[in-house]
Image 1 (cartoon, rainbow, N blue to C red):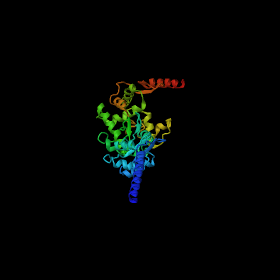
Image 2 (cartoon, rainbow, N blue to C red):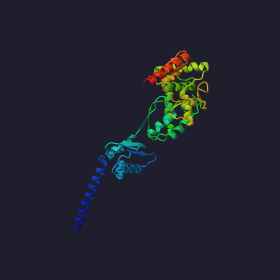
Image 3 (cartoon, rainbow, N blue to C red):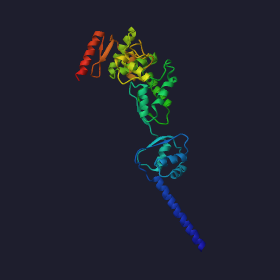
Image 4 (cartoon, helix red, strand yellow):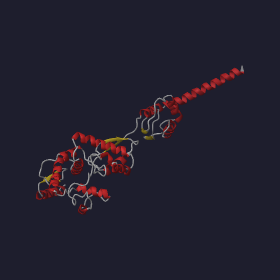
Length: 332
């Protein structure tokens, strides 16, 4: 009889233990966790399931790594995807596992405005949390093979990192990011029919982009530079001087008269013709303006103090426009 009682007690103990284990498992799987702050978890390629479970528990995303492993065992037909995940809302273990199986990774948005140069883009990439600006610049300065067929003289990817809104993940390399931007440039170039004199067009467009933010003025600005190029008159484009100093690391945030004598092939005051390459990354409108400048006999332009420009046929007219600009600025 005592043997029967012992068996019954053991069975009861095991039943209680099973119920406790089941309750614990159910609690660890189905009870949601509300993060007290956004939690970012980076699951790198090559992480095994045990490592993933530990990372999630360490971040406070799941209550138990063991519970995660048990759940995955019964759902092992679904592989877990590497990447960066953001957890900022209430979720239980099953929902977390489902996100990893779907590969619902976090993406970083990088906005590249028209006219940004590669230094600006590098900072934007860094500010988005995707890596260092220096690493981006290394890729932008070395991956010239991406454009060697259309810009064989290019020393960097400046001009071909197309302005747009991008979504990148931390799993992507800097090389993949610049490749994505160049791919976007190529798509736009195909649409607008940019297939001849690509380097010249992109270089001129980059100057036009820097000179005016008004779309309807871009063809006029392009005409000024086209007329100067045709007449072999120095372009005298201030943005090119700024770029020369950016390359040298000497730009102080504002141009002074002495800066116009900086020794650089990008200085269009001292070197006639276009600079040796783009000084920024133009958008579609500036590219089209460089491809099809307006038919004018303008040789000069200056800001009007209201966000637009006054254009002039000769120096005398230009000087009057400069005086009007100064009056407009001083009167504000």
